[in-house]
Amino acid sequence: MNVLTRRRLAGASALLLLTSLVPLFALPAAGASSGYSLDFIAAESSTYNHATGGGKYNSRSIGTDVVESLEGGDFSCGDIVSYLIAVKRTGGSGSQTVRLEVSFTDYSTGQQGVAFNDILGVAVNGSDDTGTLGTADSTALLVAETKTGSDFTKPSLLKGSIDVSSVDPGDQVIVRVDVRMACNGQTPTGNLQGYLDDAKVSGLSISSGQQTIPLKHVGQIHIDAPAISLVKSGTLNDDDGTAGVSAGDTISYAFTVT
Image (cartoon, rainbow, N blue to C red; front, side, top):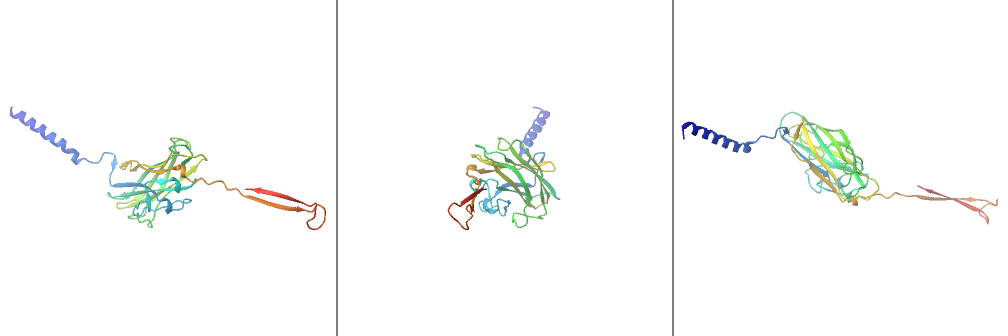
């Protein structure tokens, strides 16, 4: 073996060694934004008024403040279901706006009868939520709401795009998403689902994966029976002209049903 051949082999060996070490020092994938973590979760159902929505992230105490799955028996038709997204920024500099993409099943996974049919609003929890960290000057705006199909029809989804502004390094912003649960009079089975599908900063995706919160046992959702009121009233008819009630007089009755 001559000197030139040995040098070529040495160069090839060095290249092989360098190639084998590259995964140990791999950079983040192109098109991804680092420095953020996201947590999609539901407010514990007993912590807020289902007519208005609410809930707090606080210390993320499962079963006390938040839950990773919901139960149909804790809700009634027409209730608001509140979800929380903790947006935590751990690096970088300057304020940024984070775009969150969420979706909710506009159908139940079994027999139809219940659906998430409207995103009623989004908001940022204030400093009374101890999960809020940093400058606490962020705002949330629902910039788009769409449906991929008709209510109570698989696989229709209710989708929303949310902009969270003024997210600074060191901030943890708690975003609340309020969704209306509607019923169509049928008896549903299966589950409803809520998803955090994606998040981006300046067009670059935040690596979080799709996060899912189920609402289980939709057949146990309370369906309020229609209330019926019956009022009966009577009027004495003095048919014989004699004062007071006498034989031959009649009484007219009226019934009001509401």
